[in-house]
Length: 387
Ligand code: PMV
Image (cartoon, rainbow, N blue to C red; front, side):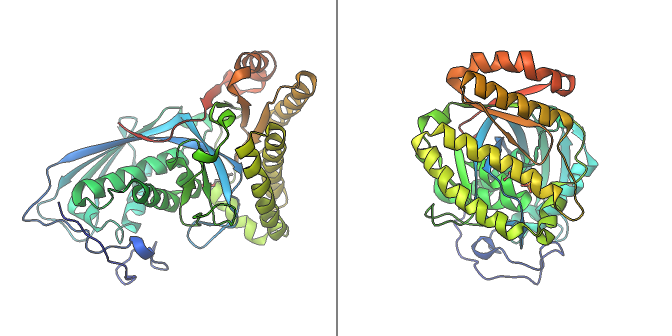
């Protein structure tokens, strides 16, 4: 095992077209190459990584997946991706392309393979050893692929963790857990912005803010230690209103923020809400938590409706559920709140001590608005695990 450091210069000359306009800063390391006279044994690494649900939303970006405002999310437990990365040293390593086989739920998947290959090739300045290996990725989600639950956060974080574990297995360079997490979060961010928050247990903050020392636009930082106990026992039942693919992707939605006349006001509002929410998360103030989380969901979709061109991802049943949740809260006083991703499905957030009441409410009053009555039950979790 070789211990390597350094490699901090920015070598843009050999980058693929995908990345030729930026460098990886401290993570670019041309010295992470295997010694062919002492090749590693074949091996495999498997990570299970969860999705996350944003409370303050990341919507609008610049550069390479850099957020326009800080965001904070709860890490989920049940909605996750398992990814196994198998590797074998290639005797006659071809300098050019990465040798990758890709299986999704046990079947070869060309579309996912092409996307993953492009991503891995863009990462060659960070992990140059990838082109010295024959790689096989076997991946799958714990929820139906077509369920309308975003799998990019769980999928990209699982892949990033496999890559960092592979680097550490081959070179011993990521022994420090904090360094490891930071790099995994950085790599996950490049795959899908919000994926960088899935690396951490309970909750994570992504985006530079004076409210969280050490926070960065380049990677997320843990917030679990600061979370009030009540939020560690929170549930997120995801009410699947529609399983259809979104008419406008998140990528295009982020891009439309650039011409949105409300963009600057939105970024300022997100910062202000972020500071207030942080206090509520620390103190266990459910009413403030719920107010901000619901306002964020509505703002996210309002931004879509006033983009140019405008669009809406909400469905009539999304609004019916929202009305029912508000009525239920007024009549029962139970702290049940909704939030939304960039899609029509409703995330119902509530503390574990009222699970029986809320599950009965879902069964009696909300299930009828869900496609095929499908509900993905989830809860706040401890983050990724190597399996
Ligand atoms: O990570 P992306 O590019 O899929 O964007 C995620 C955007 C939201 O889910 C709407 C908000 C968030 O912060 O997760």
